[in-house]
Amino acid sequence: MTAVAVYGATGHTGRFVVAELAARGYTPIGSGRRAEAGRQASVDDPDALDRALDGAEAVINAAGPFATTAGPLVAAAQRAGIPYVDVAAEIEANVSTFADHTKAETPIVPAMAFFGGLGDLLVTAAMGERTAADEIQVAYGLSSWRPTEGTRIAGQVSHDRRGGRRVRFRNSTLEYHEDELVRQDWDFPAPLGKREVIAEFSMADIVTVPSHFAVRDVRTYMAVEAATDLSAPGTPTRDEADPDQSFVVDVVVRADGVERRAVARGRDIYAVTAPLAVEAVQRLLKGQTRTTGVASAGAMFDAADFLRALTPYIEVELP
Image (tube, rainbow, N blue to C red; front, side, top):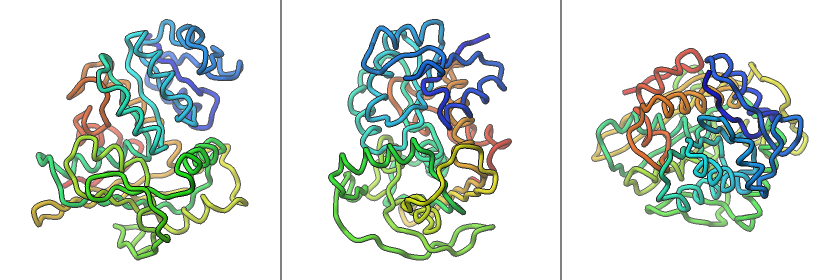
């Protein structure tokens, strides 16, 4: 059976990824910074990383903070000549992955997760044959958000890298700012309906989407309930599946006076990351790709077909 390495195999998302690989008939090779992950390898030890990937046909990096792990794992995958996929939601880490590997000879797909990958696929499906848009909006309607310990750590790393500033994609560029948070209403499709959201609550979409579309503004929004859970120190840390968490991702593309919409619905943002990442690896290994080197989900794959393949896990509505 085809073997796929999972770095961070014992983490919350990593466990979902290992289970999804096994369910699809792949042989997961667990690895990580701790011995219990399987093949122990520190990211500052290239030889250990090479041993961790020995025999693997691809690698999924599920270990944050990706500011620390992405670069070394990409380099190890390139040395091994195998595809690399990660689930990074850290904006700056994703920027670095795109910028540092423009001459990559093997596939690299960063942010292949609920934040980044799913939004990018929905945007690409909504764009159709268009290559440019005036504005793209991605609104996240999460009923709640119990973050994992890794999410909290990665969030702090990003906060520190920005010096406490916020970031957005405006006028065709990433812009760091200190503007106050703005709340507004967003009319989500059923079953959510109208909800209060935080505007410019920037997620990885502000990196993935502009990586392959000419667009002036990419705006992301987060339901106030979820943003409050994430920021509150007393919110319990996630250590198991959360079937009670539901989500609606609502994408709006505006181009040449025309508005197009794509929607995804499902449960548990961490659990749904696993089929996103594993579907990506499966398509990479089968050669079902549209480009080479480093690329976002929407650029690398047939977005509509990819999303339809996820119907056991999410419900999608495409233009």
